[in-house]
Length: 299
Image 1: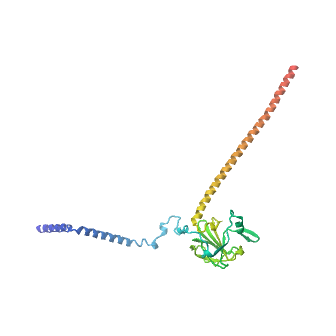
Image 2: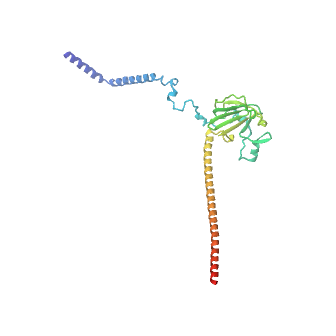
Image 3: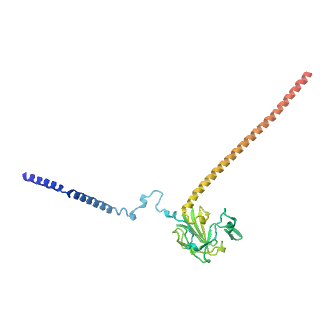
C-alpha cells in the first residue's frame, strides 16, 4: 500500500511540476490547433469529389419547368457602345443617311433610294470604303446571330440580337463567315461588303441598321452610345403611349358628355314644344265654350 501511495504522490508531483513550466500551456494550445487544422484539411479533401462540377446532377437540383441550359446574357453587352460596322472607321464614308421624317427637306431627299421608278425611304446608313473596294464587315455590338439570309435584292442579310427586341442588321454583304446561333463579339468579322440590286447606285457597300421591336431607328443617333440608351427609349415610349392613351380617353369622355348634354337639351326642347302644342287646343276649347254660353243666353 505504501508503495502504491508513493507512486501516486510521485505522479501527482511530476504532473504539477509539468504545468508549472512556462512553455506547458503554449505547447498544449499549439498541439490542439494542429489537431483541429489537420481534421479540417482532411474533411475538405474527402468532400472534393462532391464539389466537382462534373459530378453534379443539375436535374436533381433544378426547379421544375426551368432548366440550366437557358442562354445567359453577358453583362458587358450593356456596357459596350454601338460602333461603325467596319474596322477602319477613319476611312469609312457614309454614302446615304437614315431618312428622318423630322429632318430637313434636302436631307430627306438625299436619304431616298431609287428602285424600279420609285423612291424608297432609307431605313439605315450605307457605308463605303475608299474607292469602292470590298472591306471587312464587323459586328457593331456583341450578340447572337439570329438571321442569315441569302437575298439577291438586298445583297444578303445578317441579323444579330443584342437584347430582347434590339438587333443590328447588315445588308449587301458576301462571304459570310457566321451562322445562326453563333455568339459574336464586338469588332468580330462577320462578312465582306458587297453589292445589292436594291441599291446598285452605291456599288460595294454595307447597309447598316439598328432596329428596336422591328422598327428602324437612326444608327447615327446611337453610335458611341451604350445599349441601355435604347432600353431607356423603350421605357419612355411606353410612358408616352400611356399619356397619349389617357389624353385620348379624357377627350372621348368630354365628347361623350357633350353629346349627352346636347341630347338632353334637344329632349327638353322637344318636350316644351309638345307641351305648347297641347295648350293651344285647350285655349281654343275655352273660347268655343264661351261662345256657346253667349248664344244660349241670347236665345
